[in-house]
Amino acid sequence: MRGMRSAAILVAALTAAGAARAQGRPPAPVLAAVQAMDTMCREFGVPGDKTGLLRVADLNGDGVTDWVLDEGAYVCEGAASLFGGSGGSQVSVWAGRRDGGASEPFTHGAFGAEIDGGRLWLMVGGEMCGQKTAGLARAEYEGCRRPLAWDARAGRFDFAPVSDARPLE
Image (cartoon, rainbow, N blue to C red):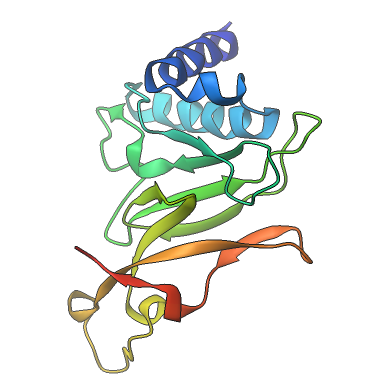
């Protein structure tokens, strides 16, 4: 019953965000990831608003919706820092398949994620932005927006070259 309730809440949140109109129900691995977050949250608090948790776009140009889960957008009432910390939160990206499934996700820590110009940009810092960090405190790391790119040969997402990174605005 809880799993069905979580799925119903998720679908309602997606509809509110407009994402459900794009491709319908999220693939099973995406739903499973959200349900695992709900289960962990219930150990310490109560799952709350999921608006912004999932975003959809065709990020690899194959005409199929891809799914982005930004754990930083998850609200766990009573345990606000459960899915985030000083290193940001995990962002996972699944490439959607024509059969309704999804690939193994690309996952990386970030301080936020946004879809702009058909690309997913992760807010990262330090060496991920091309900065030399030897001898620097983490507070001295420079932040940037770094896009993901689709590696068609490997069939997965990865970071685009550092030269594609943009300063934080």
